[in-house]
Length: 433
Image (cartoon, rainbow, N blue to C red):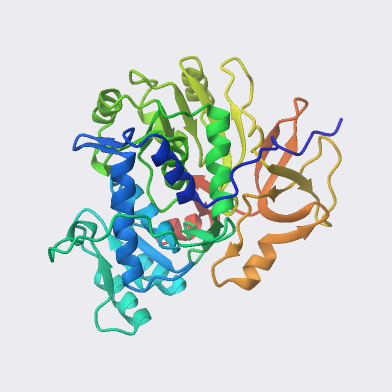
């Protein structure tokens, strides 16, 4: 019997992400939006801070779909910077502060980036500043530090800019790990981001009463998923620092202290928690690599545990499954909302039931393509009999329960702590030592 390739069909608002957030602000102005040891920011506070920064971006000449970088660690100011860029009509480009300077400069070069928001008093590396200045054609690059907006004593306006646009506008450019060569920028539209956010809100029943941990690196898809879900659900974000992630006891205490109800981790990080569940946590999601079955079953007995198979090229989630603590091998699960998965052979034909094929993903989450990479885009985003698809290079088959089982790569990539690495690169590195 052939498995149904389609996930749940859902209708989401025909809007842009920040517009959906603004409607929540109007409905729940005093609800907490960001909660940390430094205090609580309400939805109104967050909206007004983002509006002020958006006006500053517009005053600096940011135009529709212009890439705006955000240099940050795991920061409580990240939601404000993200929303400000969208409100100004730009495209969010997260740039993790722990990335090598040359990688940051490479990202700015590829994107033609001219504007950079810097959070938490970080110092941008000289290599990045040089690229920004060259792109802008000015001696000094346009650096915006939100805490300095009112330094001249002239407050920026806090009303919403009201820039017009479409759900198909570019919302974000997320760069892949670059383990197989130069990092690739993936172009994600607002409608893709809404599908990712609302799809998880629907599946995991996320409400305004939830608090979502903001713990992943901002430049990768898991961190982007963490950022979007609360802003669309009316829930609160609880940011934690990289230092706290290195102190698992401190992390668990902070999660309990701030009543975190939902957390996303890679399975390799989850293992460090050794089965501990902080008070209040109700839902756990893992992504980025195959879960350890013992860890997965341990947590599935204690809370609502979901595993995700995804890719940046489809705005995060392809399939997901609620882990059954009594099950055998863990499948990738059923296709995500408004997403279909087809297993095709080398000629583009669907394989017979139970056979192995390459995973092709069709749906609203599929990205526009790669930034300034037309040949690679044509190779990985292909026309099929089922519509435009992302050709994943992952192999899979449908099991008897209609769930997708991932069977590894068609190439030589493996996942290490959620990052793709080529076996050839590993071999070459080892040979040098």
